[in-house]
Length: 467
Length: 119
Image 1 (cartoon, each protein chain N blue to C red):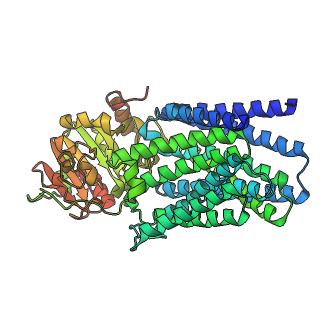
Image 2 (spheres, helix red, strand yellow):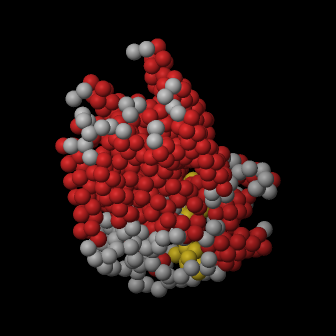
């Protein structure tokens, strides 16, 4: 091994260490920002080393340089613009787009590498890693674009299914794997193109039947796929930095997928094999037959203002109504009156893991007030008022009983609070399509209004009545 | 099975375990920035995209090199930028601009009881 190779490999290891350290520092909001900077430093080192390798090879043509630099510039500009301008509510879409381009780039690396091999001697290992990279990368690419389209509302967020969809999926998988099997036996460039097309189509048909509420699982899964695709690209071009970084991301995506699936009480197997959110919910059992009590802004405001402990339970409805700033303003006002305010965040509140936390952080809510489910659940019993905004299924006590569509789903123990105020547009159902028994609880008052208006009215009512 | 493949596989598996260990300690509060950070890290595929240029010598190769470089650069630059932007928003106390002075004081007084995990 030459001195140059030694140096470059060591620098790659250093870069990989920076990635691990950077991720490690994400375990606390206080160090997370520095963690991101450490990770950036690692990335800069890795890219600089690669640039040195490219120059050292001396094999790049003038056109090669031009396309590489032009591509990098265009990509950087688009990425930077998107990162600077994206709304925090649109983060899931952006992450999906980055998954798509990452997976796409990983697939292209293997496609190019395979294309310049000749029909002579291709080892099984090369073919298998190439195939895995191209398969996973292509599925991620098209799947993530569909996911982003659904999140953005360009494609309907309702599950799109048609008769025989399962059969089509199965056929695509058989075509891709069958062609792959043939390619292991003998080199075939047309075979690779068939695999690419089948994988792209599979990505589309995999994500189309998925409903909006299942997006946290889908994004996490596609993130894991991208990581794996990048690691496979590392196998193909024998680059450790890609293998390590890809594996780290694969692990991260895997963990988040598992967490999200658990929070929705669905097994990963059920999600992958059974199709996502295709409405396998059982009919309503038992239920909220009692009448609901509604409340006006003034009464609700007085309850809140004279409480000593309030827990706010935000759901995606809050983000959809763009009411993060209004809720933060109300919380601040209550705090200024000496009320202890915290937020109970269910793991699937939002459209991606941790989404609600970012939305509230953007509205200047200090992160120590954002409590995870396990942390906050014991506190509900000591809470005077639980204010539920745009959250439904995750507060339904029916989840504790067997035989309902959400049985076994971990929920926030909102019903244990001394009183509960629910801000909601109407008595409409949540994603699971069942009645929320919380609403019929005698301790619960319903405040029927748009979240944004309701919160602004509550804030001004608190100010005028008790200010 | 070649030694190189075995080495690669070893690195891959160990990295997966390191990933599981490190990431399972990240609190749910930071899951979105975490995913975004992981996203930026897989932008390392830019290194792979750059290496395409070394062997590209025909039109197809150049097109692939261009698209791969653009995709990967978008991934890495955009990913890090947006992660940084998000993390900047996570604050322990409300900023003075958003909160009128008295409420900021009350929040600070209250912080003692409501401050949780963060030290």
